[in-house]
Structure formats: structure tokens, C-alpha cells
Length: 168
Image (cartoon, rainbow, N blue to C red; front, side, top):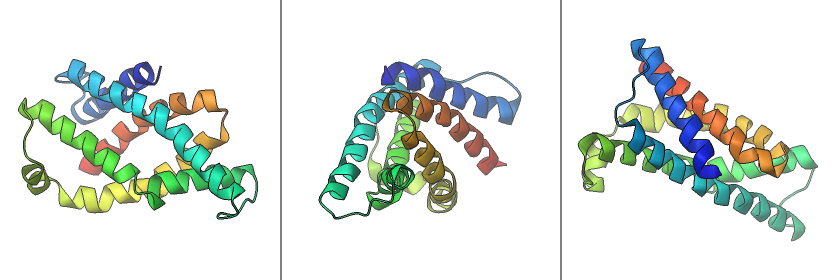
């Protein structure tokens, strides 16, 4: 289900990004992007319970404080987005796959790194992780487990919006 949720909503988020930038609802290679987003959705379906259980485990061992459910949700988001350095590399990997689709071939990571928009990847993207994804995922982890991947997929629509704003 993670595949379907992300394939649908995240692809729509990319289409929204295009729509806001060009006033047209067109997304080149949408079918390939849909597949990439779908695989990320499957990844999230695994990673979300992993981080949630991990935070609960370190709390049970007395290695992390427990100040209630909101703090636990914040802690999961904090570990996932900042402390475990998961969010930024995941977004970078997604960007690599976007470039693979654009170039129609796999290419060396060194070339990818040279072509990266450094201002975005070392400025805007980390700021969205701190000021958007950290609070958004805190709310996500306050929800019942069966809603979390769906809400994350809906948040991917927000990612399309942020990427459009970044370019403007």
C-alpha cells in the first residue's frame, strides 16, 4: 500500500510543482517517476515502524527520556529527520533517480555531486527538514500507525510546493 499511496500522491506533488511553475499539468516521464515514488513509499512503510520501534526501545532501556506521547512522536521525527541523518540522504537519493530518469541512464555519483545545486542541497533542503519535516512528522507520528504512510504521502504534495517556491 505504501507503493500506491506514494505513487499517487507524490507524483501529484511533482505535477503540482510543474503546474505552479508553468501553469500546465504536464510531467515528463510521469510513469517512471511514479515507479520511483512508489518504491520510496514501500521504503517508508518499513522505515516508519523501524524508527518508531527504535525510539520506543531506547526509551525502555532508559537511554532516551519519556515525557509522553507528543514527546515520543517528536523524538521519532527528530531521530528520523536529523539525528540518524535519514531525511537528507533519502531526498538526495530521490534527486539522483530524477536525474537518471532525465538523462535516461545511470551515471557516476561524482558527476551527480558536481551537478548538484549546492545552494538548494546545503541551504534550502536542510531548512525544510528542520522547519517543515520535523514538525510535520511529529504530527504524523502522533497519528495511529495505519495513517502514517498515507499522511507522509500527502505531505509529499507539500514537497512539490516547497520545491516550486525554492526556484522562485
